[in-house]
Image 1 (cartoon, helix red, strand yellow):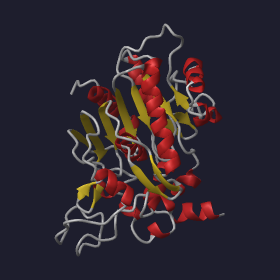
Image 2 (image 1 turned 135 degrees about the vertical axis):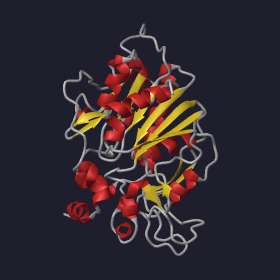
Image 3 (image 1 turned 60 degrees about the vertical axis):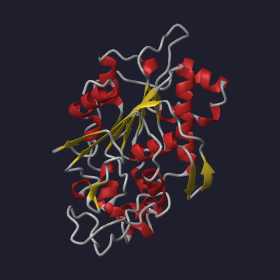
Length: 330
């Protein structure tokens, strides 16, 4: 009952991805899970307990891997990290990265060069409970390390969407996490990320996670959640595009503050994309006068004028942009 109460009390921003989304992609022949070759390698190299294949989703819980030892990795591998209540591939009402992977395959990528695993679950009733906890962050970092070791690639690309952006940033940056499930250190910064594409990530929090929702929704908590802060100077309305008073700084989520103030190079190229009419982030993507989806120290950015939160991940335009960004065609 508690989970149901949390769900119905959450602001629309927190649950909209469970209600308004692009239709699941139909007719695509993109199926997982991880290939038997990759799963055997994972078991032999100490990753068996991580359950990266996520076979509880059947063929939709993961993607990637060689077919056999002769299957070569030619292109720089891409790791996709999904957001809250989504999955690696289409599962239920969500489409995961099905459309993205189909596009990359059409452009000449192989299964051995495209990777995704699912984290969390696809229940909208649990969306308010998910945080940047040690268990999730550590597991996703191990997946990234496994892909790099398995492929033997000297560099990887990352495409993250929504909460996958902030999780993805942390697994690359490493360091300490003070989370609701305890404190942990996930290791040193990773230096092999070539292009990081962050799509509609709440890097400065979500305005709809401000008081009073921070008090009862774990995903909005002050420590490892999306709390944006409740004021900035004399400004009291988080989502106003223009601050009426000086706003020199704001106290917000410790997890987000830590990654935003970490000047370690995230990747050689850091791309931020978002929509000015995002139906989940809302407020024109603004948080205390700045775009919350703009990763600090980004090298490139693109703003879509008319896409929903899920469409910034999976629409034809967005997917083509992601392909062009990682291949440096734009």
